[in-house]
Length: 410
Image 1 (cartoon, one colour):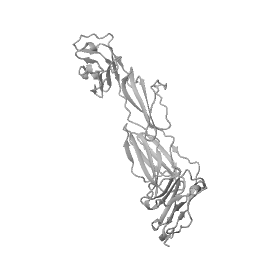
Image 2 (image 1 turned 45 degrees about the vertical axis):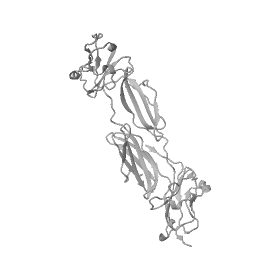
Image 3 (image 1 turned 60 degrees about the horizontal axis):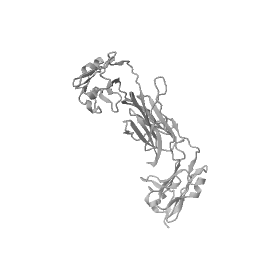
Image 4 (image 1 turned 135 degrees about the vertical axis):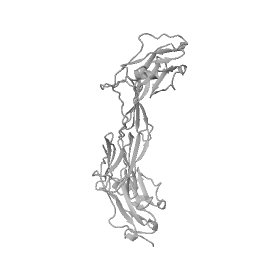
């Protein structure tokens, strides 16, 4: 669970009575923070209510950012810069126009950033035979700060592994990757047996390199690899997923090697080499193992961000990455009741893991506390993040028909 805490809580106060202005003159829309804490580092938005593109004035990161401001307000709005440190977030509107008539909202809040993120469940993949053993690679994404990667054996002892490779994604989160050469342990124990004496053959003839499993279990569902020892690109023959896969075979062995398909079920993994050549002289290794795959992954802690004022409320978006199978995303209020939210957006990353994202429009509540929960029922896994939106949302208007702020022609 990740809870965001703020060092100060405050209220946002507007005028008790409607604001009245005269067309052509300047008008101030009052808005204050109680207690009078500094608003210099806060996020201040002035919005027109019930308007499709509502931005009247935006102050963020200690400067005005009015690129998306309603065009009719351009060059006519400003805050009181020297008063921000006293909690005064009032808006000055110059040269009031008839079109300014309406309701306005003053929104003050913190810009939320996440500085600690827990990444995806590690994913292990098998790279095959390398340097006298099986090369396994472990990868995990979405971490901050950078984590450590440790490989361990079945007894919990650390294994000597390669250096940790690190990359950063578009959100500056770390992807870590580390390889290890290891010996595999199987649920069904067996030995791989070769000949007691060297195999002698005549050039131009066919030769069989004997290899058997003890006990004689079926090798049909196993991975069978034949290698030249002490060779840079050592693959002589590869059988995996019920078929030969010799794309990376040493070229001189092309179309000259084969297993005995009917004998695999009896544990016979011997290799037949046709038309023996002088260059075939050397040491060979027969490796039989299971193919490792990962079909389950638990994703990252949900990250909640504020998108701003939309459709009469505050738009929040929740995102979590690195799930398999696809999880559900649920928004809840402070009492644990589900909130009506938009549809769940789903994407797949480069490893075919799910990225899920869901938005919700929330209204002001007593404590402005909301929870995003991501759950995978099949895995019995739940991750959730709680956020508190500080400040109260106050609506006050410029609307003569409602006897609020009126614009009078002079």
